[in-house]
Length: 170
Ligand code: FES
Image (cartoon, rainbow, N blue to C red; front, side):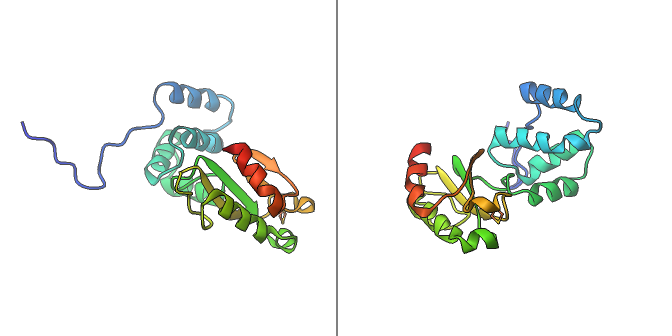
């Protein structure tokens, strides 16, 4: 019997919501009034399992929560915390909105890009460890420059402090 030919782009999809992850989703659903209200935690589960959220993952989330893929994509693209492509092991978000920019946020971004080797915003360092992006206001305008490293919030960061931060997460 010959091997099955799979046209490009139609490779078998491995669902995220099976086994333990499906059980977790079912538990989450009991805490929300509607399936739609559980969209954000459902997306977190996908990102935890796959590292990022592909269009096919969004379609699966839509299927399990009875939402259209377009609605799910609208939410994923609204929040910078959801990754739409593979990212490094550590994800750095630097606020570069005007108040932080005036206080030197661009220099903090440059320091991260150089120290991590990521090179440019949105790219991942060759060792696969770091992705650095610029984001809008993180809600800590009085503590420029605020940065999120993974889920850790760090305030009043200066370029001089960046190498120490990067060392800590290596
Ligand atoms: S402008 Fe940077 S935290 Fe608000």
